Length: 46
Image (cartoon, rainbow, N blue to C red):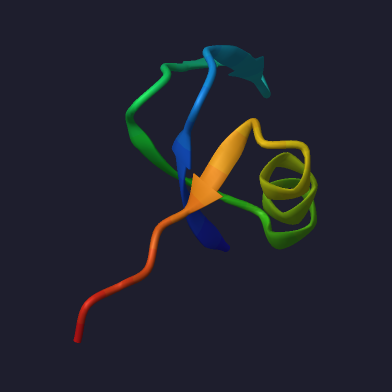
């Protein structure tokens, strides 16, 4: 699972994901969204 900040609003598995909010998404979907600029990866601070 990867945390991403959404750049757009979208529906995912029946849930509404809002732009600007952070969500935890499975890795393959997250990488696809990041590549297509739908989301940005959120880096965890230690």
